[in-house]
Length: 271
Image (cartoon, rainbow, N blue to C red; front, top):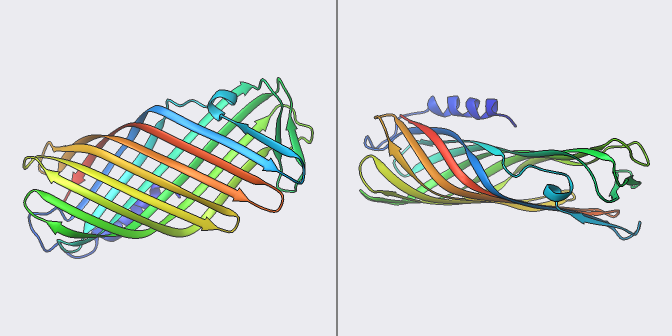
């Protein structure tokens, strides 16, 4: 999933009818990213049949840089004053290059044990894209406060890859998944401090379970937005999102936990 898909969906929504309430923006799109100041992750891989077990922090062991930029696009279209569609695109990634200080035993897809020896140079990367499309119902709205709940679907692509200068098999250690549409639920509270300034609280939960994969993705944001011009706004907020993935097969159990926290800066267009 890429920003191109996000743009296509935005174009489709812009072609729909007018919002019923003239004092409410019909369409909004924002672009920005997180300046990450806290990053926590862990990876574990076990195989009872092979007597294999490894657990490590990719930041400490593989040199993943926690000070990264997380790109985010958001959009919302109201087809009435109470009903609308929202969409989001995220790309979260990390990478590193380091000579490891201990042996790492990985289990390949074929069940063979891949040993990355002490001192080997390892290049590693993690990347996942999430695209969300959801319906939102504004069940309470007055001059100051708006409360909304929603539900919809999301699409996820994720890949974790380790490439070593030397392994016992010459293979690359990796894990990857491409997931079909899965459910998402959300809640949003908005408060207009002044006609030009508002603050908001938004939380989202993605739950996935398909084939051998299971996990959750959560996103929480608290921020403020200021309307510089009639159609142009800027905002800043505190955001935290986390991903937990578990892949369990007859041969192995792979667990990945990731949480990032940072400041979210964005620019919005309102129409």
